[in-house]
Image 1: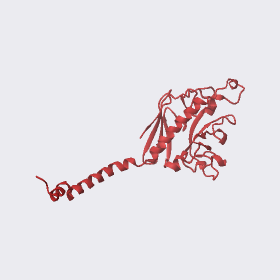
Image 2: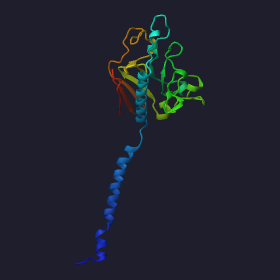
Image 3: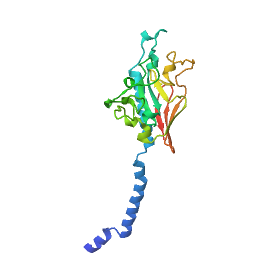
Image 4: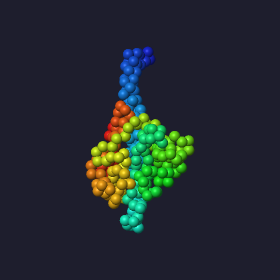
Length: 235
């Protein structure tokens, strides 16, 4: 028996109750999914820092500073002080915000500080140097209009990071790597041999290094493993 067009339309159409039910379900899904797609500045900062730590390790492996002609006691410049490193600072040159710099300390007898000629170039834009603010010269001064650094490396202003703390197997708010990619702690400027400081302590990291970024309410951690220098993040 053939159905009437009137009955067919009635049976196939949504009732008002069904339509409301579908709208409610869509609303619930949207409320659940959309917040998860929104960015978290603190997590973004951790991902960026972790990536740049890996890049520092890459530079240390590819640009091994070893020079047999500069190992004698009379030489004021020691090759092992020139290893690539990443250091965090907060000063008037970074706008009193947490920032970091990637550099090889090879000028002026390796003082432990960074200047424009020692800082890595941005591999994506060679006109920029990899600092978020470090010194009083225009190129490395975040507050100077002629700043040549990268604003995103100023994680205080760019991501709201208010503190950076090193715990575990590292300290001194800096990390460096040897030619094998192994992480070292502390400032290289106080080294008296490739792996010992002036106090005679071993500088190779022996246990996991934790770099904790905080925005005042939440904290995320970056982990660097000893020996391999493997980097991971924990949110």
